[in-house]
Image 1: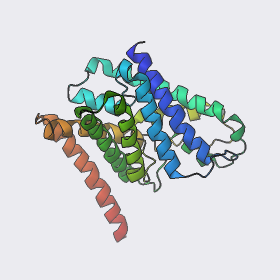
Image 2: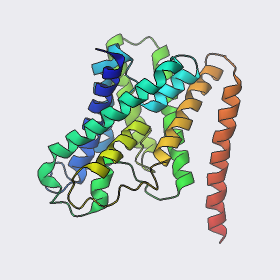
Image 3: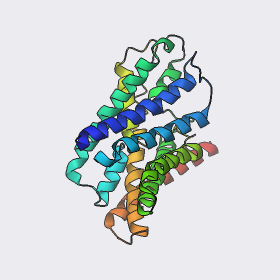
Image 4: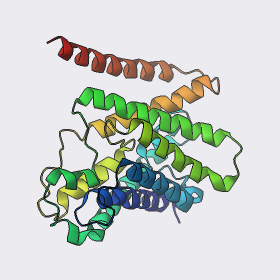
Length: 266
């Protein structure tokens, strides 16, 4: 199997099981309806673990453009392969979302709220403040990529690594995911959002394209900085890119802070 197909299948598994658990929680007449955030975060953590088990030996199981770009930024992955990996991840995410649609076919008409249908496919913020939401996605993906590199540097029994990665995603979801739904993966959000737009979902409403840039830009910035941070502080490899991306992230954080502060004073 090629690395392209490995990334496609891995991301398909991630989205099928990850978005699938959201469908089970929010769709009417589902046996797991209203089982809550713990179930969703656990489902996503296990989805990542299974995807990594499935294709880790084939493509390295990036299954996330932020991971691919972060590894490329520190020289741990060839830049020439980045477009191929990201294309595979996006295609796999679209296919995974279509599988979720098929799995819950009888439930779409039973669910009347369009937003409930959208959240199965794409993330939406708990409080819509785009710059603050951007910061949340940056922080979550920073922890993800930093954690992945730290896990890879430890001497775990080889077969346990994917499970530990799943626990990392579970931890991010439980601790940080309540703000935005923790996309922490541009393909996981954009691919299913595209699927939502095209699929014949009864009463589906808007795909919320005005927000779609946040779970793309935030994870890419956070993922690249997480990789550069690990390289700088853990490996002692100093680069100009660390400071440039770090300053950019700081500017975004300050913008979010002052926007919220100015609202309080009005």
